[in-house]
Each structure stands twice: as structure tokens, then as C-alpha cells.
Image (tube, rainbow, N blue to C red; front, side, top):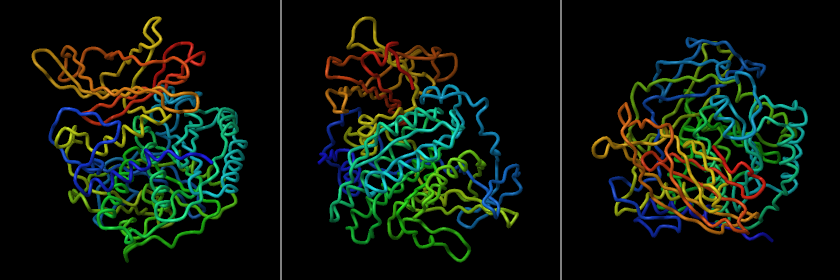
Length: 524
């Protein structure tokens, strides 16, 4: 029987509870940083002054409808009509030359705006036979594709331990088939009681938050195909008020994080039973989807995706979801009445002037306080959300691309590394005469071939450069810093993670030791 590692999952639910009460002792990753103003809140910042929607339009036959114009759409927020500011048609998101892609670094360098697909095999609460069927369905879908996929696709699996990256973004069908073949299905745990549901909730939401944070740097739309059951539904009224408040904060933060990263979630449960119709008022506007019973599949509708149940053609659903991800319109509007209530859910409805057409997009968003994310909380401790993001990212295998970075060994010294950061991704401030500074958090850890953590260092660094020709912009395109960590056997991989403390943007890469990385350099 496998031994579960509850650190990240337990941390998520602990954060929810901690935000409803006084501050607690920080987890091991926590390091003191200079104190500053800010609140210890878990609510993700969403700039609602400009709301951006990815919309799929279909006709009565379920076929995607291209070549519509701005006047074909009418947008309502909280039942008030909005003025459409811009509309980008589906062809504007297509790849220019459909080049081969084999990594996140290649994706962001060659096609930084194209839509992508992420396929996640859920091994948290899915029966073993259904896990096998899901693998069969993904293989069936891939077998029908050409050698080069139309969309870059990432493959992963999530269980009670962690999210496992099986294949980074690639357009190679064979790479995905090989990764699928190498992955051994995790036998699901079967436990009873409330604590088990909490662990399933933790694992599911930790994976969703990890995906949202890791993919923020890619501007294109993402179709996240979650094949499995996620966490089981439960009634939040059975929780204490303190736990219920914390739960709502986690849900709202996760929804906003997915929406900010342009992730539409498609939940595909091959053995599930359909939910009751979603709650709508008399005019067809959605209520807060999480005001009542909490269900994993509600996440799909909230992000503009679909929830599918009890289907035997999962491979067709994978194909349809990927198609939708490449056939969307991007529409933006500025709310007539800006929302400022941090507890409010703002309902969105898109109506087509042609009644034979149907528009699908996210149901709405949660309000936010329009202020920057705090660098530190009271007393010099990092806010819980920052601790959670660092803890998840440090253990992940995913490449995080919100902060672009390159790592290479220094000369012949095996334990010394140079990290080069993109200056434009950093937030610079004037300090003294002709000087600019920025503060970052650097986490470096080593892992053995089985993914077991061996060593780790956490450092807060202040970088300084000469002032550039324009305000708060250095002349140099990159800035460098140096770090060291033991790399002797059994170390097989070094994980480099950098966070910009002013805006919380994360960059992370994996440096594989040995012959797998003969060039001695990796980038995201």
C-alpha cells in the first residue's frame, strides 16, 4: 500500500481555516521577509475593470460558428447590458505555421498565444476500472490523430500524493502515447468519513491551483480535460462557520486563478450521474454556483467548460473539448457598475442576437479589493496564499512560465548554477541615484529518481542594476544571480523556483542531472 504525503493537500485546507482565525505558525517552507502592509487573505486579485471572456458559439447542430462580429453578441453582467469593447474571432488564435512543439519553453518562444490542451487523469476518487477506461479513451483519441497534433498538449495525472507531469507540452502524438504507456495507474484509496472527503478536496484543488499558477505565463486559452470524479459532493452546511468561510475563500481563489489563466475546465466522468440543472433565476442568470452543495463538476460551468457524465465515448469528448479550445471568440468589456464587494458573485450572460445560436462562457466572477497583492503580512510573515503557492510549486514537476528564466551550470563546478531572469518580468523600483532594485524569493531543491526530496534552500534576494533609459526599466535584457546546492548521487534532478515578491509571478524549471542534460542548461 502506498504511503500518502499529505503536506500540500493538508496545507490547502489548513490555509482556508487559518484565514478565518488568527495567524498560525508557518510551514517549513516559510521564511521571514521584511515586514510591510497587507492583509492575510486568500482571495486572488482579479482585475474586473476589464473583463475578458473566451466564448464558444455553436448552432443547433452543435457545430462551431465562425466569422461573427461584435454586433452579434449582447453581454449582461448582473442583468445590466454591457458595451462590448473588443472581439477577436477564432482564426486570430490559430497557430501561424503549426511548428513542432516539445516543451513549455518552445511553446512560449514559438507560439506564445495559441490555444493548448491539458489532459489530466484523475486517480483521486475514480474506480480502478474507470481509470483504465480513461487511459484507453485517451489512447483511442490519440490514435486517430496525425503524427503532429494540431494543438500543443500536456498530459498529467493526479492522485492523493501529488500532480504528476507525464509529458510537457508537445505536438508529437508518439511522445504522448509513450508517456501514457510508461505511467502506472495508482490504485485509488477507499476510505470512509469526513476526513477522507477533506483529503480528496485538498488533492483536487491543490492540482487545479498548481495548473493555474504554472500556466499563467502562456497567454493562450487552455482547455483542461479532467478525466475522473474529482472530490465527492458534500453539503457545506455540515461544516462549522469558520470552516465554511475558509472553504469559500479557497473555492473563490481557485475559480479566479483558473479564469485569470484562461483555463476552461472540462470534467469527464465516464461512470458518473448527471447533476441536477444548474440554479438559474427567472431571467436565465446563474446564481453563485457554490452557494449550496459543493460539487467538483460545478467548477467546469464556472470556468466556461462542460461537465460530462456516464458516456462511453470519452475519446469523442476529448476531441470535442479540444475543438472548442481552438474555436473560441475573445470578448472584452468594462463593467458599467464596477463590483467592489469582496463577497459578491457577479453573474455573466452572453446572448446571441441570432436565437438559433448558443454561446458558452464562464458563469461569472467573484469581486476583489482593487489593490496590489501584499508583499508581506503583519509581523513579517508571508501571507498564507504565498506560502501555499511556494509549497506547491517547489514540489511540482511542472514548468512555471510566468517568470522566464534560464539555468546553467557554472564552469566545471557541479554544485554551482547561474540563474538568468528576464528583466521585463521583474518589478523594479528606484533606490538611490541611478539604481533600480527588485526583491525575489529563490527556492532550490534536489530530488532523487523517485521524486523524493533530498535537500532544499530558500533565499530572499534583492537584485540591483543601473537605471535604464526609461522609468523602472533596466538596460540589460537579463539579470543574473548565482546559487549552489549539493548534486552528488542520489540526486537526479534540481528544481529551481523564483518568485517576484512584488506581484507573486512564479518561474520554475527542472534541471536533470547526468547525460539527460548534456548541454548543461534549461529554460522555461
